[in-house]
Image 1 (cartoon, helix red, strand yellow):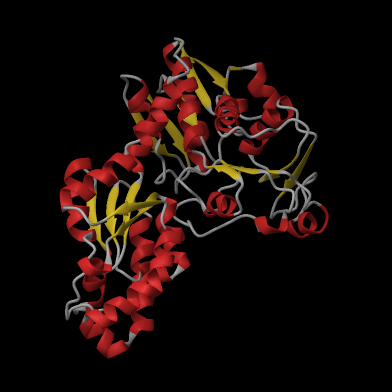
Image 2 (spheres, one colour):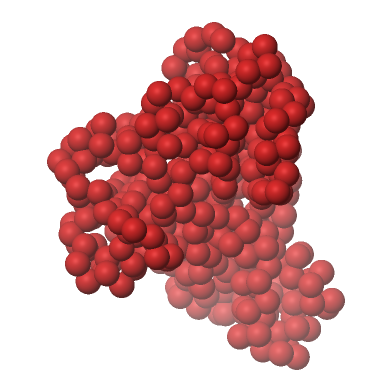
Length: 412
């Protein structure tokens, strides 16, 4: 291996795609069991590596030289092999600082709650102190000196103004996790989350719903990779490349989710968008049919709507955890807020707003088989579509016109 990232569980990693945007070098993802870490480092069969959970602290004694800043933090995430000697650095620091600055989150004089007590939290602590945090409180689900339990935080520290999640809670494949109840923090101003898969964790989405500044870890991941590459290549990169890397990786990872009434064109527009973007097309109704082994009207008749909605939610949870897709949803998918939340974890929701007179009821749609039923569904759901979407699109044009409107909004 010339260059790459090592960690214990890396199926969620975006690092290979990110480094492909930065430099012309081979970059690999390598999972290493804890008992094999020391042997791998001692072998020194690499030119440069990134180090992630849970080895950022453990590698330090195995290195020949550790940058003073990384040593003071107590965590290394970048190791370079120079003539057989290993040099350790911490580029997470610069990535975290860039993340905070990106959303304009003011740290100076604020009380900050840090979730987690591992190597990443040590880096976060250094960043927060250097940016002037007034007080830093730690919360952990294990008994660690200096850290509070969740019960103690809810009892005594709900006046925290900034929350910084450095734990893996909410990370793929356990996307439904959320480390804190944000509504318990009335002074909250913003949230930073190092988790980058999913792109928008439940924590970030909840903060946004409360009107707070919040950002996940994808920008931080890209920025720290740029700084790591500087060490790999012994060269200085233009800082503007951080924005370029983020935009390119995001466009290749995020989903475009289409919601709207039955017959509003979600499937045909979705297929057109798939051709324009190169993203895979997925129709959740088709996935449901595969799962249940019969048509949706047959399933409705046999088991009822509530059972269908349960299956629909299962399918949406599965589909939405993937990346780089055009996802066409069923007309009633937005009725369950959990469906919308899961869909938004890795994408933006576009509402195809097609006028009622242009909708066509058909017998294969159990809840909108005639115009009277279609009108009822339209009146029931219209406000939900509007509230659930990130972008409302005029759906009255041709397939090409509507697809172009969505493409333009997505590519900004």
